Image (cartoon, rainbow, N blue to C red; front, side, top):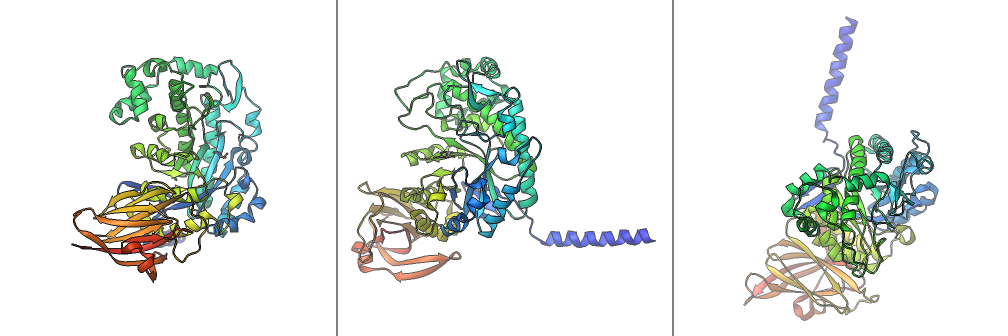
Length: 554
Ligand code: DGJ
């Protein structure tokens, strides 16, 4: 009888739990989701725009170093902090894990209403290996290093070692298991960066015995199958190398992709390309394995970041060979399916070209490192509006965090307009331009109108700092004759896209702010604030928002 009562009670408790679980919205961990043509980061069921910044490499290793920094970060209008978690601190002795630092970062980020992206500094950081624990560093027989052409070891763990890979994967899996346990419901951590700027520096490839054997052996069947299945959509450089060698479907690396041509004069030339393809495959396989081990514990989005090829740098050493650069993106897709995003760290002046290259074949844009000055702020706005970026994150925020920087003031405005940006990403109803001081005007067609943005340093009645040398304008079409525009140091003119013989007038122009996603109108603008009564004028000291309704006349 007693037993039956217990059973009945247990059934009733089960029923209550099930019912209450059913009435609660399901807890969804951070994930990527398609929104029209865009891919968005979903947090607690809603799209999220990461107005992020990255700490210096060592900052997050000390909670007391971080303590005074958190309020400054929060005051910078940042919503996400990119912080290092290093293998050496997480697993100081093999199999003994210590997550005290991770837990402290979670606690302090939450107290400051900030999200985190953790950077897993495991086997590699900037093409070298410095963050692996001492028990790994000192046991090179078990954990082999890359060798150069002369057989000399470099301070870089070899990607062709299962022992290296498995030890890294075990530690990463333990970290992800811990994050699921302590953050699986709170979602402070949004994404994981797996390793940091990988690739071989100071040699065209790994020449360790295992690497030589693999390089002389056949291109793995999985890679050959992938290339054949995606032949028509391969990135052009890879397609050309394969085509030049007769689209072979099997054979050694130099048979399938050719013997590399080395051109040290032209920095854009792909010297040692076959070696790069080979290393890309091996890094991708390794990191794909590490990421899969982590995702099996806690499945949140994961990305890898890239040291880009820089102008005027010598080779080898121009960039770590084998990282996810555009020319080997397909190799990374083939080898590292658990990685969701291939990310560029963009310090180079040709920012827009890199964004074009990193949005090829549907790669979502997340920029984990960049400049954080006025130029960086312009790039952030432009990337969100033009390329549906998921996030933007200047590097080294420790030095500059505070409420009155170019980045903080720009992020403040971007945070206001973020719900509208997210609504319009991937729909063809939003675009952006970059304008340079002294540079040409930019014209875009959006909806029923052409919008021409002209850089200006004139600001009636407003005392401004010197305008920055580069600014962005973001345009959102909210109705047939309606636009919301974020701009700075520019005038924006309109012409009819559908019937050019019609003149376009400014019906109403308002400045304003968004609060909680709602538009709060400020001044009604007209006269000197709307040059020639046909343009919107944006101040030079910061990004501001205007809403315009247009009309036509004959
Ligand atoms: C690129 C690296 O990925 C970062 O960790 C950092 O070292 C910066 N370079 C420094 O500029």
